Image 1 (cartoon, rainbow, N blue to C red):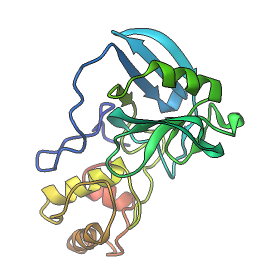
Image 2 (image 1 turned 45 degrees about the horizontal axis):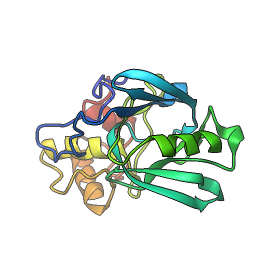
Image 3 (image 1 turned 90 degrees about the vertical axis):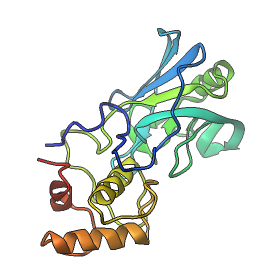
Image 4 (image 1 turned 45 degrees about the vertical axis):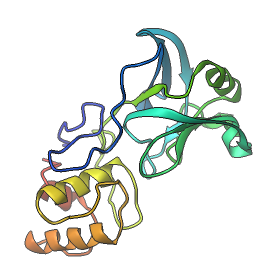
Length: 217
């Protein structure tokens, strides 16, 4: 069973660098995304004014859980991204809210982590939402509580990677930045942790590693 560590937001362990800029409660509008419900909500001063059906990341490339801001607005990035793009300040990769040339994917876990909308919907959202708008993506940083968290290895990115880095850092194994990017430093730290805990030192975060780090029970 997953431990309740996120409360819908990325955790901030005591010894880890802040993972995201602190999003101030500013502006009339805010966006909420609920990946399990495939829903995007726009609020004006707390009141719901728009609701959209969306597609979100699949289990291997999940939509990043946490609080972000719209930091870029662009048009016509290519057919796969539809007519509009609203970029998020996710520290470990390029993620955004965009249109799609696959409207059949709406309402499913089909993206590589971005939030897909119907093209007419993203055009409407683009005109409505200013830069700096707060975007809260709800869920558990380790994924759906009814499923086991994904195995992680060098090259993976995400909030779950950042959580592993934070736990390894708190335990004295990792000295790098908790940036959500699984690089060689994370691999080396993980292998040392695995050796000390009588686990196979293969540099892969498996169920046994999650358990040893106190993230599963």
